[in-house]
Length: 236
Image (tube, rainbow, N blue to C red):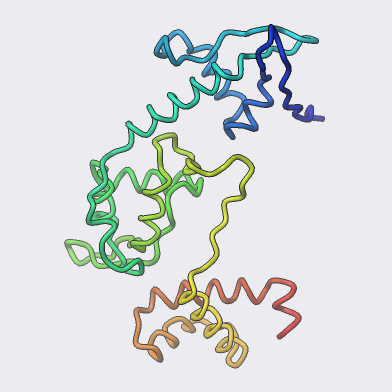
């Protein structure tokens, strides 16, 4: 059975010291990552490197809290500087615009679309999922991404591959739908209750509302998932 984490702050020589469980809780980093920070400390700038062990108490290593916070702030800043420059045009236009994978790569500063395809193949949730497909340069259908999803990705990326930067420790990563999206979901739920969940429901709703099929296909999927939730299912 895995040992339960036990974050601690102690006092040594009048200064607060912390153990690695505390560091894990503070940063959200994995234990292997934290170990790497320590073992690679000689490669870090001398004025902002991971602190040496301050003391070992009951076979647990502790580190100076102030020195660790200085290291971590510098570490975060170094990561931010590694982020590729984003074209300001990404943050212009309507959030529901759909951009091709090639356009997304160019706006985000990637060398080519291969970087995005790699993120998607890893299936970690780091990069937003395609919103559908659009016609590529040759007319072939290629993945398309909602501009708003790309904007959200750009705001939170820091080069560490987690996509969790800027999120307070312990805060669940959750974002509710925007009002207009919620309205579409409710419209789709009403339709599905009347006609049932069937192939082509998204296309039918798109025709009714004069909007792209990809948009309503996503909405129908979310509406169906919502209907499968216990509270919603009881209302059916």
